[in-house]
Image (cartoon, rainbow over all chains, first blue to last red; front, side, top):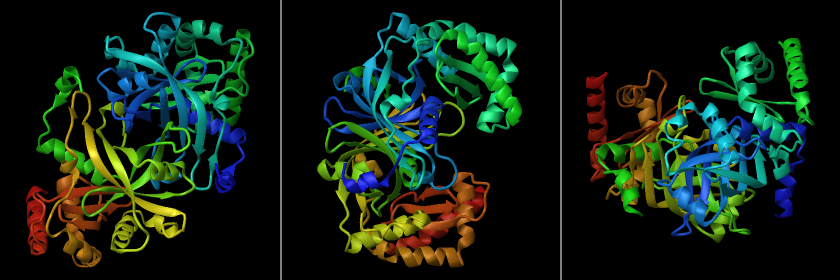
Length: 253
Length: 253
């Protein structure tokens, strides 16, 4: 990196880290860049995305797509997250991750967990998730480039996107029942969170994921990420943390 | 390509070719995949896009962006076009081009032409287009992969995206005054084209480009491409062709 390039980078602060996490964790899709297995040519395509409980992006792809062969031959990949709305496309925040792809073996706890989280986020994926030519890959971030709009370039670390908590494994086991419980007994919390922390004017939000660093919400096509102030240190902190968020949300709205 | 992959490809028909051209020619932006100059890692980022008069995509990028160094070291790149709207992101059409990047020298007719077309498409780019660290690249397509949504995969040829016409050079010289003339004396034609051929309900469309294969329209952030039934054989065909489109548009609307 030249000195000139360093000059244009802002120091990564908490706001930038939060934006980086939201762009990845609330995404529906990304552009993935891979190196073509046969020609070595770079290739860009669109993939549906989710995250694993440790914040690592996951994708579900078909062996018919060229990126599957590419990733199996060379696990280096890049993901570009960030939706473009009205106005200048370059004024909208986006984030590029350089990643190493790890194919998820079809049997085992990791596959079950990733599958469960992914189809909760993308219900239509249930139609093909179990087809034999489909596979999940974890795309473990190695380097990050965040662009929050003109003059707002940051270089967060890969660690800034990773969720580390001693409660992670236990929480993952609890997640399906926890999500169901929240949607059955505390559905109003999702709307309140979305209104307070995401300025949503919609109602009908539901919980689609709970991990050690926060919750994922959905309303139709729209996804939202609400991060806890700190990742949970132990599983017993989940309930008080959700209640604290709710009190906070009620104060804001 | 395996037989299985071939099986899922549909035969490229005129409708697919039209969709491919619209995705590229009416784009505001794309994801670009390049190979990092230092590490060889693929990298995905967002770029504003336009087209040259021959239909070749062009980008305007800064030397501060990593893709400039990448393209100078290895001209192989891939562009992913196609905006995502409501519903499943994979139900929205997109196209991947494998390209070879050619940097556009800063002086000369080609630069003037590309610059003029680009800033007409992206007026805000006037603010930085002449900065010394910015440069245009033509991204000449070598291979194409079109995905019109589930089960609608096509492999058009690079030639399907290229505009070939003996009138191209003359038209390029006429373009700035032609665009100005259409917007001054025939502005209603833009709205009519947009309504008839793009089902637009907006008014206030204007002409931003004219080439041998059709016209580019804009209304705020929105772009639209209207292709002629055939590329013009000679420059004298432009006026009758625009009039024929107008009659056609009046019949439809």
